[in-house]
Amino acid sequence: MTNAKDDVDRIVAAWARERPDLDVSPLEVLSRVTRIAKHVDKFRKEAFRASDLDSWEFDVLAALRRAGKPYQLSPKGLMAETLVSSGAMTHRLTKVQARGFITRSSDPDDGRGVVVRLTPAGVKAVDTAFSHLVQAEHSLIQALSPSERADTATALRRLSLDVTNR
Image 1 (cartoon, helix red, strand yellow):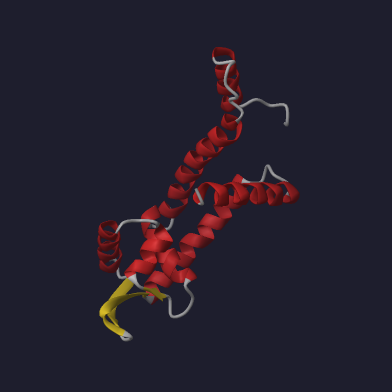
Image 2 (cartoon, one colour):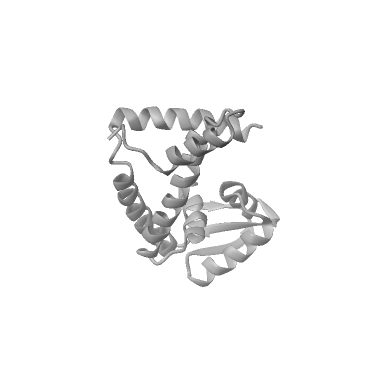
């Protein structure tokens, strides 16, 4: 299957033909990353739908779950984990609180602050969704051998660190 061609091969060949003055080789990596990301995003949305969560709900609940017991963060910590604005986070917290997945209370260490904590229902929801996600994502990478997965992860980590540090 290594000789199979994908859409990016066609796009790169067309640009190379039309713009031979440019080195279009970055497209071979970044266009594939972009296209894969779009497919993965759709796949993840379907996996979360099976758990009755939206992607953004999972992001909030997962950030709290990854924090470890007692599964709590400040809104600012959640913003850093999910890469959303303050306004978006406030809206999201209101929605997931209405579903009974989180509580918000005063920070005992700083009366001006707020602590967001997962409820038992929130833990159950995120754990169920995460199990569905991991199972689904295993199916997405089955075309790669374990060593190819490790090599791909290493290369993408290096690229991610370089891109995010610019």
